[in-house]
Length: 135
Image 1 (tube, rainbow, N blue to C red):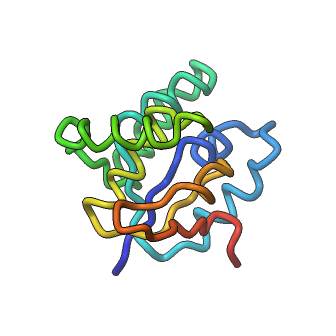
Image 2 (spheres, helix red, strand yellow; image 1 turned 45 degrees about the vertical axis):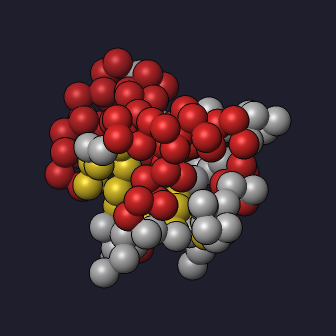
Image 3 (cartoon, rainbow, N blue to C red; image 1 turned 135 degrees about the horizontal axis):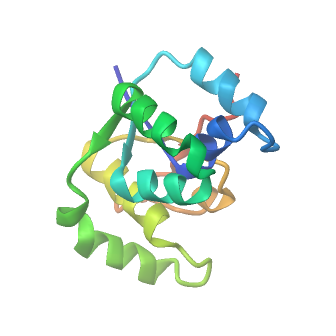
């Protein structure tokens, strides 16, 4: 079953009840049937963006619900290329790390609130499909 790479936005929204996209994040997690993949860059970003009182709840949930990719270090050369290519956006480290993860694992579906993912292309020029709002 193909995986979905998940960005920080939906995860932050899931653990922040007041977030504008909280209901969308809850609905997304309830409806998806595919494995969710992310990396420690995104995990760190989420922890930095949610209230301290929810951080351990998020980490416990993430350890059960997410496939946390451990190959970001080997992706660093490609991440640098992506960040340089999309410097005008700018592509941040987390976004570039997810594009590299998608390339390495052959994943074309992402869950994100970030509109930059509409612009990013994989090394073989494929577009990543944002499935966060898909029904």
